[in-house]
Length: 316
Image (cartoon, rainbow, N blue to C red; front, side, top):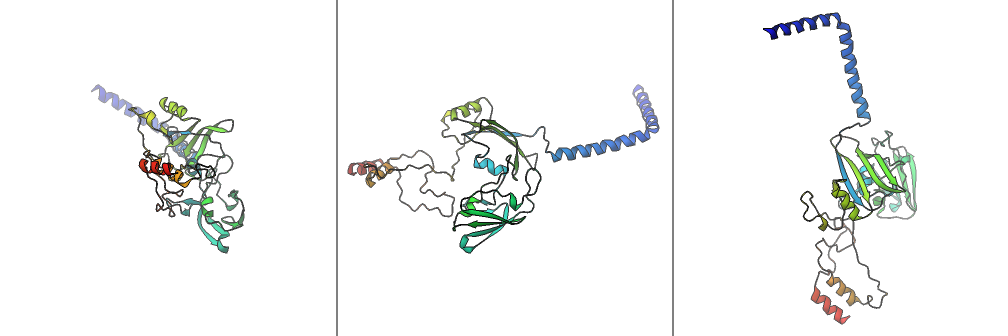
């Protein structure tokens, strides 16, 4: 009974207040609605994400603003072309191209919907490649001519290099939010997602040595540690997982000085080839990437054979 009386009293008070202040309430409602819409548009424009997820990555090696790892450059921007898994050029900023004059002239058509991270449209005049013996000429805002001094078959792979304006501005899925330098070296780089809040930002920390990077991982400064030479340091770690991934765009090779009296002997070099043990990594039989259309493994193989190595060494 008491609850009913209190509820009735509140209902009467609310009704009287709404009658007395009908106009201010309506105005306040619409002002609040407009304010919410405006706030949403402003925060969307500036990609404001106060609780955006972040992936913290550690890398070993030196980097400068002009020489960033290629994988990071690809996140920030793109080239006129891009390379497929087989090494063949595919369309990127250039939607198509035409080669004439026996491969000395290329005309690229630029995508008209591409925009730099500052909001300006990408134009042919923005392309800032500096390639020896290649002249770039703007035909129109969305057409670019490249003239080569001599035909060069891999030219389309050269223009797959991501195009970056000053301030590391690109047109890729990530843009540079923050960068910290020590001298000319990059120590910290924060990339934020351009298109969607569900894609995590990326923070990169650069370490001079692997031991420093491992320490950073132990301290929790990074979540992922990439491209280290050995995973033995993580053996026994319960809270860390290790995965091996071959890089088919890299090759580790051993070169012989054939002018040396000993290394000049073919049999001695073959003996060294047979003496190289299986270290557990995938072996490259060619300097050409295994994923390339031009790759072949129909070459002389020197798989580990210690007995054969000793025979050749004895006869060298």
